[in-house]
Length: 216
Ligand code: ADP
Image (cartoon, rainbow, N blue to C red; front, side, top):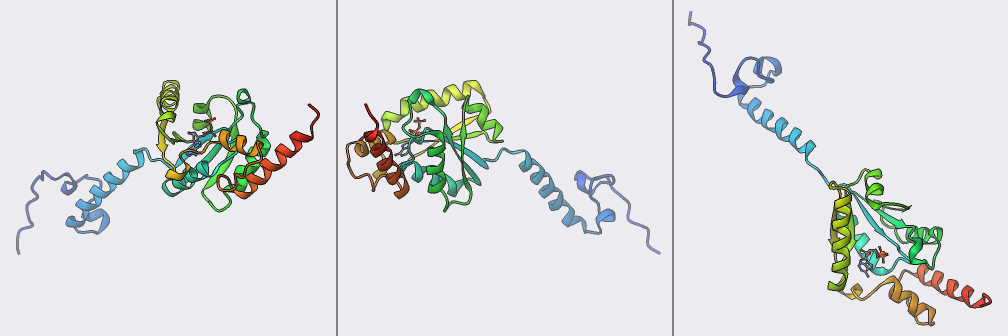
């Protein structure tokens, strides 16, 4: 009768008795246990790695333009959840009320299942964390946007180190577009149909028509 093989201490921990997975426990051969442990450890590590799932795209959206929408669509392809967050921002004296801006954004994103619209008041970094997010998306049109956006991003980071800002550039044909310009053109009776979704153009026409009717 042959002598049972002498058990030698191994330098490979997954082969040692007491290691988390052994053949006797799993019924799996040793050669399978090693890669299995590697995968488990790697998997556990990945669980702790930060992943960008939800991003917040904040702004006044007074009103939303095709440039905003372009950024939203690009973000929707990259992230699991995109929240278009409309800032109350009364200092800017918005043309549209919060309810109107929210409605216009909601109508513009119906084709994007992972995008939602919301409103917020107060510090953006607080809202971002409240949404269980850590990432802000902002649009960069041109160098002229950079200075302000840079300052804003660094200030938000100062307010909360956990929050990062990332920038997305729209299609080149939208780089000259802003809510402000669109409102000016619409106010003067110009055609804004190539700059905004149909329902936004309609809302602008109605808003300025109503303003004209108001006694000055
Ligand atoms: P805010 O008052 O915060 O600037 P806006 O609604 O004007 O709000 O803009 C929100 C974000 O969208 C900003 O990051 C701005 O740079 C970006 N943005 C505005 N217009 C465009 C556009 N045409 N293309 C890409 N990004 C844009």
